[in-house]
Length: 266
Image (cartoon, rainbow, N blue to C red; front, side, top):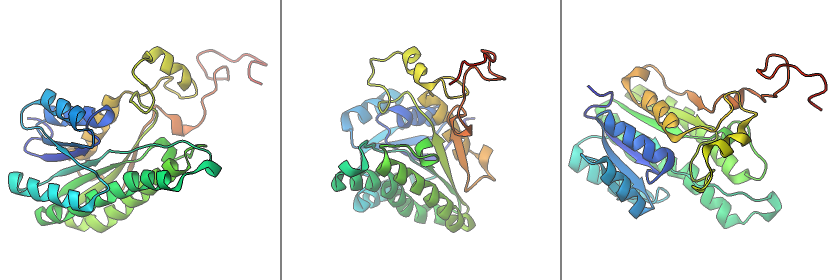
């Protein structure tokens, strides 16, 4: 039996990257997956590739009414919603003095309020069932911060606070809420599709595992949190970052595979 047999799972941002990998893995583990995104053609293609009972719905996660309509449809179609993966996000990079307020608000509205509205709308069904799992995706920049990403980083820090608050609020109803924290992933945010992984890895020599992550690696972590394997885990933050948040890996120092070379590091 699959780890998610007979479960209904909503995955946002499912038209590509981590969202698509998560939807595919969840379906392989027996879930009825509802893929949501604003990119209709790409999302429909992913759903068609999965086949079975996977369906795609266009969803602007910033729209409370759109969430309500989706949940109403799924309630009538399936009778329950067991898992919500709040993965959809957008990024914006600019110096603080160059901040366009509308763009910054769009980042926060998508990354924070998108997850909040998703939880708001699925919570009543999960409470009624006495169970459910919500996984909110933050980011390494929601743990450490990064220059040029003020709005994005702030929104991803806020996602962590949202998850912890929801874990406290929804836990007595049997609903688990966790945060997944990916580091650099080989998705459209980091790769326009023309760069080989070997080239991307060169930017990750400061990471203990010495490489960029792959979407399936975040998807596997999401599967763990969403499955009964994590039945007594809530309010947690699971890092999928190759050890990036542990500190800065410096080649050429004692303990490194390259060995210690005096004067190698300025």
